Length: 227
Image (cartoon, rainbow, N blue to C red; front, side, top):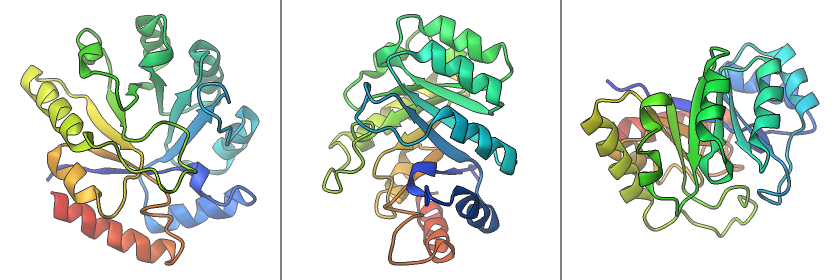
């Protein structure tokens, strides 16, 4: 059976007591922490600073899956590499030197991913897909999750499906990560058409009406339904 990686977003945790939140996440059995680095220019949000991530690294052994949303990728890549993380994803749209950034990350033995905004074509991956470990598909506009009425783009299913076919037809090993309204309602479909890694937020693991434990049970059911 396929392994589906669960990556809860730190920005959906209690930012006033992150250590407590992480202990709760550890207790329910989670694969990695998804950490967004946003510079305030690429998107209007700015959830976590570098020093906060350094402190998080000192209190948990969970793998860190870092998603950089910035106009200055190289600066943040180097800063994050020095912290000690397991995976770094940067955006294709803000990268003048994609190969350079891929090599910077791989040379340090860290997994590398490339993120695509909703409307960015999969054709941008033609030459880099063999080099990366993960492709992140943004299914809403990055950094605008505060708009609770925003839905996944209408072509979310098709894009995941097309990427799955591209990877499989070429015989590559890249993981497909999905981010943006990855909800209990959409997870079965996303898993079914090829997503391997789910970034979890306010519409799945962190739904307010139930506990983390209850949401995790419902999440496991949704994943199983997709498999």
